Amino acid sequence: MKVDSRGYRAISESKIISSVLRTRPMAGPKAAAPLNRTTESTRSMIMLDLYTDATPNGLKISIALEELGLDYRVHRVFLGGEQKTPEFTRLNPNRKIPVLVDDGLVVTESGAILIHLAEKAGKLLPAGPAARAAVIEMLMFQMASIGPMLGQLLVFRGPWRNRAPEVSNRYFQEVSRLYGVLNTRLAGRDYLAGDAFSIADIALLPWIRTGSLAPFTADLPLDANPHLKAWFERVMARPAVQKGLTIPEPFPPEKQFEGFIKATVGLGDLHAA
Image (tube, rainbow, N blue to C red; front, side, top):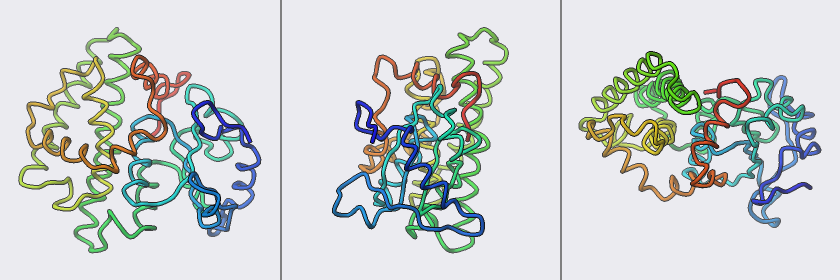
C-alpha cells in the first residue's frame, strides 16, 4: 500500500477505490471494506474514508469529523493534478474534494457531507424544524455567498496579481458586504444559527480564517465587524476545530498561500463548493 511522506494513504490506492466503487449505491448504500486511520484493533468498526486536501472546503470536513468524534481515515488528494487521476475521477466525476465514503455510500460537495455527518452522529444539526432551517439557511449562505466570493477575491488578488483591479474590487466590496451581513446576524448570539454550535459555523470558519491569514486579503474588514470577529475567535478556540485544521497536514508556512491557490485553482479550473 502506497503511503506518502506524511503518512497519508495516496490516492493511487486503486484497490481501495475499486472496492468502494464496486459497492457505490444505485438504490441505497451497500457495505464497503471498513477502513480506519487509528488502530488495527478497531478497524472492523470503521467505515468512513475522507478524500481531501488542506483547503477551506476540505478542512470543513476534518473539523466536523473531529467535533463529532467519528473515526475516519484520511486519503490526501494533492490538488493541482492528482484529483484528475482516473481513480479519483471514478469517485467524483467533478474531480473536486472533499469526498466522503461511508460504508460504500459516496458523498461529494462539502455542504452535503456536513449534513450527512451531522445526521449520522445526531449532533450539530437540530431536529426541530425552525432550528434545523436556521442551520441549513446559514450553511447555504456560506456555500452560495462567502465561499464563491472570497474564493474569487483570493484568486484575482493572489495568482493573478490584481491584473484586473476593477474585478478584484468588485469581489472585495461584495465580501466586505457579506462580512457586514454576518456581523448583523451574530449580534446578540454566539453562533450563526443561535446559541448552539452547528455545521453552519464549521462551514464558515475555514473561509474566514483563510481571508484573515492571506496577505493579499489583509484589508478585509474583520476588525470592523466586532460580532463576526468575536465569533471567529470563539470558534477558533475550540479544541476539535484546532485539531481539524491540521488534517491533512497544512501547507508549509512559506508555501501556505501558494499551496492554497494551487489547490484552489488547480490546472485552470476552480475549486468546488
